[in-house]
Length: 267
Image (cartoon, rainbow, N blue to C red; front, side, top):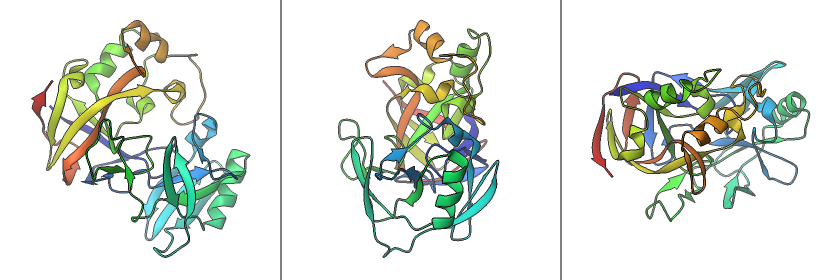
């Protein structure tokens, strides 16, 4: 087995960025989901309510981000460490984030037709992983719940064999895609070695309406697919319809496309 792709999502719910290699730390891939959008009440905003976020992409530049979309592009600088913080949350998890990118706020609000602000999770904010599945000291970025998401091409092939319109892996927004395993093999993995990194797979990933959206436009062209077919295939578990595995890095380092993937423990 080997790594087929590595993808980073600098801004929560915006388009992903395929990369050849990445450094993995406590929060997952370096730079992954350290930014997000909030509304006028400092409530986090995602593609679940604003599908047009799919049309916006962010890439790192010196000192910050460049965001591009149908209306052009803008830059946002990482706030200084001593910048004021504001209280927000990701689901039920409180986070302290920093604002201050006025030009980006205006650009994003115009692109989405709604008042939003771009905010950043500073290094000092440590949002714990769900204690039911995490260990003391493990923390996460502004991702939904866990530092990393791992999927397998074998599982996608099994799903696509049942769909009238096959879907790309990008629908599921994984960080690491593993090639060379049987369908649903990842359900049995407990620990993996991926390049220099070791991962603990902590729980299946419950999927939402985002996987029914076109990855570059946010449109829904196939109704509830692929959720309906995943349900018919028996992928419904307590907590939702599952595809992929949430993971925490237990040994940090670099992962790259083509790296060998070794199963260290199954369960």
